[in-house]
Image (cartoon, rainbow, N blue to C red; front, side, top):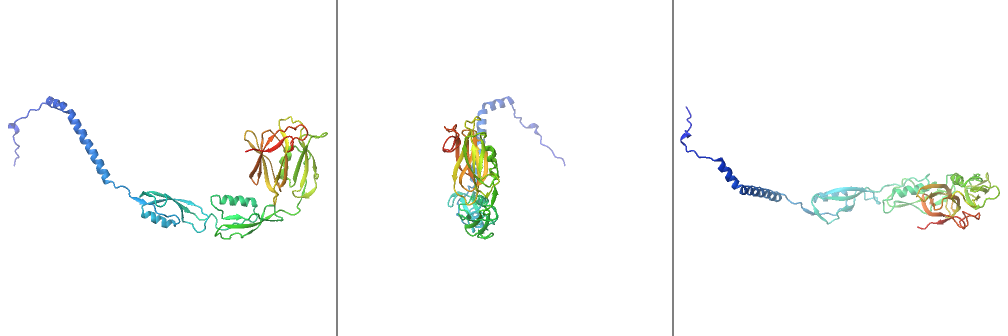
Length: 370
């Protein structure tokens, strides 16, 4: 069987003129472009409308009040509202709130969108749950430790009873001998701990060291290694005495005295200093301490540079020491690592009468105005 194709030879031919078509397109180009742009803009607009119509907005919800509730309960309540927690842990001063919500943000009752993160501060409980063993430790170290332990808490869990009890002991001064309540006592509420502190050995004998002939700098350097208290006074050099040195002491070197007994020492001060420094005796009256406290004296020059002049133990009462410093230097007195006062060194009017460096005349250490 053969397939016969129609004979198109007899069909009429339609003439096509390319030049005429291009001319027609040129005449209507503006209309064609505007029509295409309009069609495209309508299509984009329709797509945007359909997209936003199909996009469902987030639901508005009220933040529940979860403060004070357990973390697991709080998370279930927020999950029901399609809210998500952002948790921050914090130590508390209560023994029974571990795992409870301490704070929340946004606050309860706020209207937010579902899916919002809610900041929750969760209690880690108390930082310690038992009384530590302080026996054998220095009382100053114990106080610093407790202060750092409860810095972030509104009220500390452990408070040292003030004043503590003191008694003589073979233990070094300041050592904790007894405590009440005893170590490992459970903490269920803030507790006061009573301590018995060592005053050091009773009638402990020490040998008076020799300081006669030492310069001011040498004397300040050895104060920390001596268990006696020096009461310094000043006068002009006599005879062959060398200015700026200790010229006498009483009791004499080698004497056996009770620990932290007072030793009188005289310093020969320059009548007219030639080294540009101010010479004097710093004097101050401290409270009487139950045992010798650690004292540090710093010097701060005009450029703000700080250096330690002397570090020693002192039982309180009259305090004095010699100095030879540049005018304008500031002396800083630190007791138990806490600054208690500052004084500025000034050149006095009577610096040439042999009493330079005395508190009342000559160079003086005067309270610094803040």
